[in-house]
Length: 446
Ligand SMILES: [Zn+2]
Image (cartoon, rainbow, N blue to C red; front, side, top):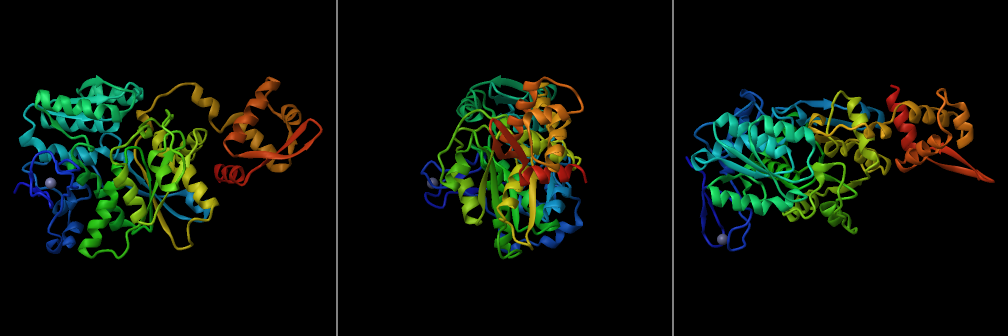
């Protein structure tokens, strides 16, 4: 049975592409017969996106690489912070990101409409996912990716055989281009801002979290906003079926440098500058309204994370055995900040979505400078014992180094919020560990 979406306002029917808004301006929604859904069947099926077929569009053929069903891992950091914190490891999907959930549903659904192939505008993860699933289906994939894209993602997309079009500085600029390409070449467009069918796949994160954890809070790295909205829709459907009373509070994490969604929630001035967390570099997300709705309607909040905290996040996730990209690692400093603010209650159960693998990233030696290791760690250890000033630290270091280099380390540690000025005596500035620095040191040595 083919799915049909009818505009509740003007009655227009959509069967191939389902845009977020009808041409009359009404929001379109993919809905199901919620009263008839028997979720007891789910437990008898294998884990994965298609386990929830009653709440997915019907398809003639499933194009699957066994996506979804990703592990939920109890976090060590959570234990140290006194939180029931779980990591939903989406890096374990076939192409290493949550977008495989979108691709399996969109590609399977659209096979009858995609004789000439598929197109997506993406800043990398969606493009890699489409490349893999279109390939599996034996169809062409065109991907419109921005000029700023991590080399790992590009390599993956090219290896999977997609035709790559580099367009615009950020992914939002490519959306219109992909729409043009879809029309000109008669391609099926799976870009979530142009076609909401793939969000049906992404929402299965909510179903898995509900089955395994029943979280009170879900923390989601947020760029375009499509993932947090999808997860919200998933929980909303569970509520409609009567499986839960209250939707978990959804917490969006964005980079301080690019914060269109979080700033709206927090009521601060938005920024739209390039961030190292490239997958979060979406300047004016079309799904902003939906994402903000997901956050506010669920009673959640948003957190902004500074550039200097990205390496810290990656390092702490690595300690859990997970290598995540910067855009996913933002959740760690966000959790630390919320814990410091005592945002969580004692009985809260928190899931954080680790959206994408670090293997897709860019590796450069400059990254090591910021890593918490070597000299920085040694400085933190010294400052744990007593407050010290720069010259004193320089003298006490095991490995001789340039005097100025010590000040560079101190500046970086300070901007990461790990140390702060304790006092001044004449020209001497004495440093001490912040609570965050202390937490970090303790967590690295457990
Ligand atoms: Zn309409």
